Image (cartoon, rainbow, N blue to C red; front, side, top):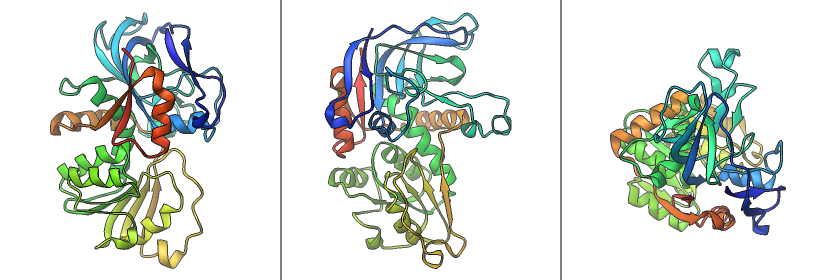
Length: 333
């Protein structure tokens, strides 16, 4: 099969993904094999390719926001049938027996594995997934629209829940990329007022189009104190500004898998008055199921920009340079 293959970690500007032939995966007894139609391009892919996250094996096929139809099932699979359209997400496997898994916090499982990281992903014509970790795709979403929901959407949704945002509350969003443009649609549907801080003009324009109450380049210009905030930008220097922007008792959620170092915080200025700073790690399957229910119910429509598989490096370069509005999606078939 054709795939975009990573043989060693390098800066994306060197175009390290090589398009070539790669062995077609064979599903294990608990896995299904899909013919990939679309795969979202995620900032986590960039962190993997550039070495911000350690890789356990090479060669590696990245990609974990995957949509396609099942063409083969393992011997123990019963949940789906051949021809079903499913999504393969970032979270691929957990042990199911540790205290985290048993208590509904499988995202913290020490044995967790991830698609496009521990196992080869969706920058390819075929991909596998344990059927218990796949999602059926709502009929109202195209393959291209569904792809960003499988990581950007799910992680953003968990961050939104962790923000403790309340009806009529003032929610701040710092950084307006793939996750943020999905979550603003959910937040507005749930009657939150959304305030967006982004350095990118294209991103600010999209935030305005989607209905943000206020959009600006700096938190210092915010017209009100926020009840909560989500930091989607992978930049630690944003965190103090986000903490200063929330009112007493406010919550700031860090939604990225990788964040540059956070500068020193002042207890009085940034954390006093019972402010809360919370991180998000991956997601649970419950988060994913809830998100897809939301997506079907409110007609959530991600904004996407398509690239052929042969242009995976270019898509990631544009992502790094903040030139993508919404989400970049590789069209495989």
